[in-house]
Image (cartoon, rainbow, N blue to C red; front, side, top):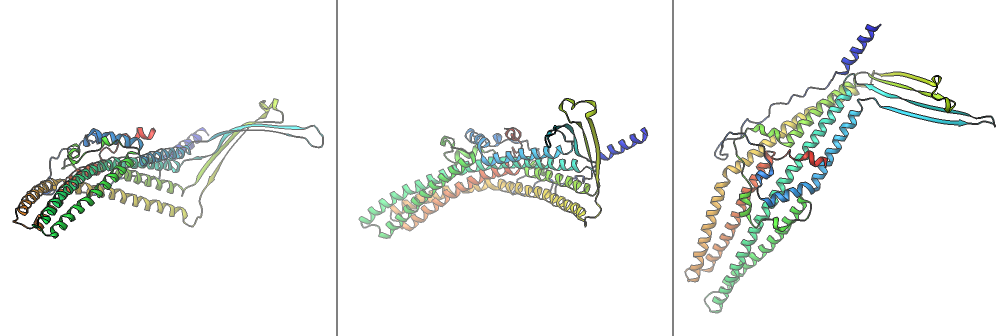
Amino acid sequence: MIAARTLLLATTLALAGCSLAAKTVLPPPPVPQSWPVGDAYLLQSEAALPVLSYQSVFTDPRLQSLAEQALANNRDLRIAYANVAAARAQARVTRAGQFPEIGISGGAGYSDSNGASGSGDFSLRGGVTAFELDLFGKLANATEADRNRALATEAASRTVRLALIASLADAWATYGADRDLLKIAEDTAANARESVRLTRARLDGGVAPRTDLRQAEQILATAEDAIAQQRTALAQDENLIRLLVGGDVDRALLPAGLAEVTPSVVGLPAGVSSEILLRRPDVIEAEYGLRAANADIGVARAQLFPSISLTGLLGFASDALSSLFDSGSFSWSAGGDVTAPIFDAGGRRAGVAVSEAQRDAALASYEGAIQTAFREVADALAVQGTIADRVRAAAANTASAADTATLTDARYKGGVDNFLASLDAQRSLYAARRSEIATQLLLVQTRIALFRALGGDSGAGVETAASR
């Protein structure tokens, strides 16, 4: 008899450790093992990229101060951290189902009928109600699925953090570029006013036609319109920075121009193995989603097998409170229920098929996240490999346009050229200066995009912020 009980206990324990979940096997990254090579990519060293922090990439103390404010006050980040806390709590709720629930109940009553002496009824009971034996891993796999979803939610919060820092850096750089564009518009307007004054004087002296004055006035009006547009752009830049920071912004923390921005955004090296993308928070989120989907398969498969629940109660009952805890008042009961599917029109097997299809979708999402990350980094590296040449070409174009405008203006004042040549030269200079600013801003934005694409600083501070 003892041997039979021992065998039964051993069998039960063995079954309790059984799991029907599909094993998670991560596929090899569906991308090449290195970034594209060629003139556009300028492959550098093959040294491994160090773990990045935003302080090491964005070195300006003013931008770092704004980033700290954003990490503390940004509402989107607060929502992400709240979602992490909720997902963790849900995992604990699911895990609690693996343990027996023990409760206690008590009651007291009194009845009196037709004037006869009344009688009392007192009870105190406690025990386990409907504790399910997890023989086939249904509850364990459900816990594992929710735990992985919680980890995926945490990775999603790191994506929000990464996007916040990158967006703030981009807005900060755009503000500096718009300050430069405003100065270009103001310089152009000042030159246009002087041109209008001189042309009017030449018209009054009978030297220049009225068309020259009208063309000069057109240049002035265009410059004044550009000034108004750039002031609007600067106000909108401040509004965006204020939104990202989550509060008021001290203007002393904003750059005066791109000359202050470009040196403070550190470039990142190329030539890093593409496996570094496995650190990206969106890739990590997809991986945990895949693991959760595999655990869901185990839950669905366990539904195909019988479910065994145990109940047990013990306590005291008496018709007098004084004798409630006497030995004769003690009682206990125990029982069990077995529920087994016989016919459900294929519903449970269809549930397994649903879970397996969702696993396949999660696998495709995981591979797609890696491929998307690879493309984003490769695109950023392609721009980084050629942007220096574009910056030099834009600077040379501006210098040539400025010299042409100076010479053409002198020839016009000397009566050699007409005013149309001077007008075209001024327009070319204005366009060249704006193009140079746009190219310099692209240089900074490419560095920011590469920081974001590589998942830099995505894992720092999440636990502390979530706990807070």
